[in-house]
Length: 98
Image (cartoon, rainbow, N blue to C red; front, side):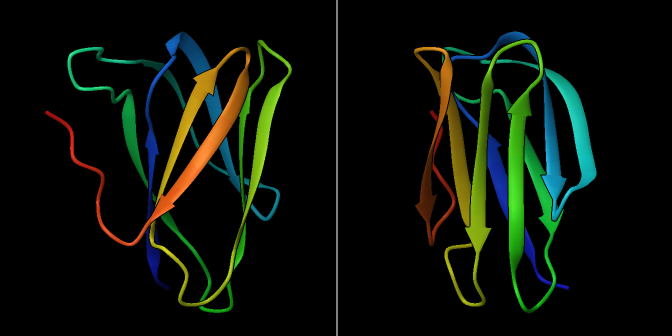
């Protein structure tokens, strides 16, 4: 199974975050953004060769996002908590944090 990298990036201040793949929880943790680099947590998610849907949720807020993954798409996803909602971006290369 190929893996994607999910970077939880900016805006997290100790919230619990749930990551699901096709409805099944694959990761849960409390995250806090390190403002010096803009990264809270890096999560590896194994995805079936045919793709799937990665859902990221912050249960304490009405914040969630579904990311549909197709075969051959960008293997790196970034998710930030901005203005009370989750926003995402995709990349073919790992995001750089300084």
